[in-house]
Structure formats: structure tokens, C-alpha cells
Length: 262
Image 1 (cartoon, one colour):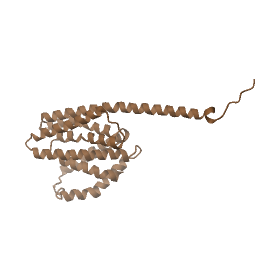
Image 2: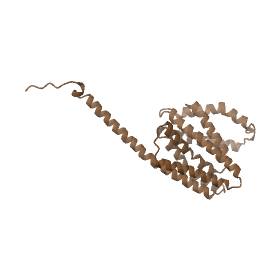
Image 3: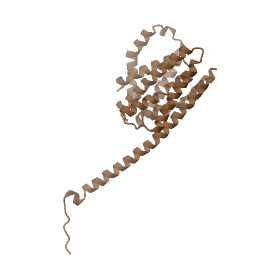
Image 4: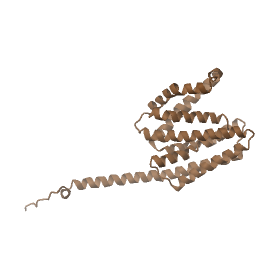
């Protein structure tokens, strides 16, 4: 499973980090939340998840938020670079959705996430590092202690802790519900832009609101579905118990009671 998932993980990480360097933190985060759309489509097509009107509303809000973000970036002074960064982040969202759906399909609940990530790490070292050096052979020469420290910090908290907890959520609930939770980073990304003295545009604020509406809609749509699944399971269990008791009854087994004497 790890070898199958690893290429999609590498592609998602590469395109996202390339895109975030060319656009704002808010834009990259909002666009990355469109992975909810692709994850929902993958879950409906390959995992049998139901598509309700609330989920459709959430998808529409995500698309609207994406459009609002690109409109905001196109008004900036570095519009061409920002649009390119937005496109790379969108490609990353699609790759991330494929990675998420594949994780749910290939990794059962008892599968060790640590082993899967270990295999992904070995794949990145063996196959990913040569690709990085080929595309940018001067990267190691520009490495400084500060950059190395930031890479280690990001690797521990993003690629280890956060990814591990997120993968367990995918295993325990559903790819769509776990991916929707990522949209909660939107308020934090707006704060990050403000702290960096890069005030988000009104379009970015609108996009953030739309994505939050999307998160709320999909969450509300998932709760009744979970409750219905539990009710269905309880009903099925009751029917199974009733059928088993009927099979053990004398009439079902073809036996007859002999009348007792006085």
C-alpha cells in the first residue's frame, strides 16, 4: 500500500510547496481545501459514499471560494506568478484527494500507519531525492542551517505528527470527513498573512467564509449518514438474531413436540 500511495504523496507535496512559494498563504490554503471536492467525488465513485444536497452545497461553496481566491490574486501586482501558484496548489489538491481515497481503499483499520509512512519515506529517499536534485541541482548548495532547521521542524509537525493523526482519521471515519477538517486552517492562514504584513484582499475573506460554509454543510450532511448507518446496523443485527432463534425452534428444525401424558 505504501509503494502505491507514495508517488501521489510526493506529487501532492511537491506541487503544493512549489505553489505556496508563488502565492499567498491564504490563497494556497483556501485552494488546497478544494481537495474536499475531489475526495468526495472519489468516495462516491469508489467507496460508495452517498451524495446529499448538503454535500452538494458544500462542494459549490468550495468551488466559489476557489474562484474568489483567483479573482483576488489576479488583481495583485504579481498576478501571473500568483495565478501559477494557484494552479499548482489546485493540482496538489487533486493529487491529495487521490492519495486520500487510495489510503482508505488500501489500508484497513488494523493496518499500521507508521509502517505505511515508513515505506513512503524510503520511496522518497530512493526515488524522490534524485528527481529533486535533477530539477534543481543547486538546492543543496543553497542550504543554510536556518533552512535545514525549518525543514526538520516542518517534517516533524507536518509530515509526521499531523499526517499520522490525519491518516488515522481517514481510517476510522471517511476520506471526505477527514479532508473537510483541513478547512479549519483557513482562519489561521488569514492570521498568518496579517502577521506577515500581507493583508488579505476582500476576495480572500469571501473565499474563507465560503469554505467555512462548505465545512459546516458537509459536516451536517455526514452526521445523519453516520446515524443512519448505525440504525441500519442495529436493525440488521436484530434481524440476524431473530432468524437464528427461528432456526433453533422445533418447527424450523422439522421436529414436533410429543404430547405429555397426564
